[in-house]
Image (cartoon, rainbow over the protein chains, first blue to last red):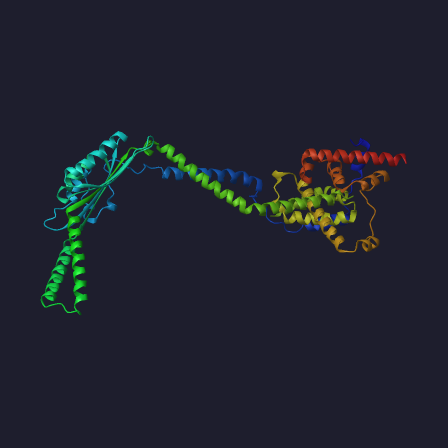
Length: 326
Length: 168
């Protein structure tokens, strides 16, 4: 430490402002000074307030988002309807829970018209054993109604949920029986009916066939000249095509297409999670997204921040060197 | 408004010698220190609206402003020297003998001149102005422990040089 004598000497011989300097400083002090601010911005204090506020805002926002979006999950349970896939004529008819009643109302009586029916059902059964039984029962019933099984796909893994996809064709007048039977196999998840009236198309085909037959008969009756032979052949070919097409259309109108999809219950039902779990999960997702945005901003701004820090460090080093001089 | 002007004038009156002493030790040039003292009070007047007594006393604030003014001067001087031909300038420039106050012994005056600016300013703040360690560290922009270390080294150096001069 400095000896008291030296310290006393330094203090007693401290520089004192000359009269001229005092005058200069008094002149400065006599100038009007700016008003004192009542509020002074302090960077450190602002950071201390802003950082927790931003954190609270981020977490609060995530929680609010989670709460808002954690309502009851969409029910995929018995009796759920999918009117969007229904044809306009049946959408309103499927108001009741019971599929057979809905289908019964949805499928109007033909009344002598030719109509192609297509129905599809998604039915949930309780387990793999029930799936096997239901599949066999559906196939057997189609044959019992006078129809046939167009295709079947069956999948029953040891773990996980199994499923079967069956497409049957049954006589149109027995389609309601088929639907009723299939609806009873388990819980209906969705159902769909589509009806296409082909009466007019078949009538037009019949008229065209009659016209072709008359034309061919007229040509053959008068003796076919070599010039008329290509035309006759073309008309016969057209007649053959139309006859087959009309027969196919009528046949399709006689058999309804029913697609049955069977599925077992999922092992872990999503509905088991509570609202709190969904809220936390959603909030966690939002926080993760916010963290991603923050990381992205840091990556973008990182080089600039490093450059700024480097410049500040260089400036401080330069100032330090200035003070190391005597 | 009137009261505030008087308040600033009173502060200027009260701390003028402190600011001058600090700047004399920092620059080792009495006339330069006087110019920088005026510059310091001009800056203080401009920033008077932002002065917050709760963050430190007026003397601390004025010393910080004085240091900033001196630093700006050193920077501009360094730039000027780089621009000019150093040899020619050193021959032409008149370097005034360092003076740190009336009545100082030659040994002490010489020893102070041998210290670096950083060492002299810590002596000025801690010994001459008798600021406490924390306040001095705030003026210097360093930690109190760094301030203490710097002061200790400066005083040891000062003692050693004074003793050597006395023996010689």
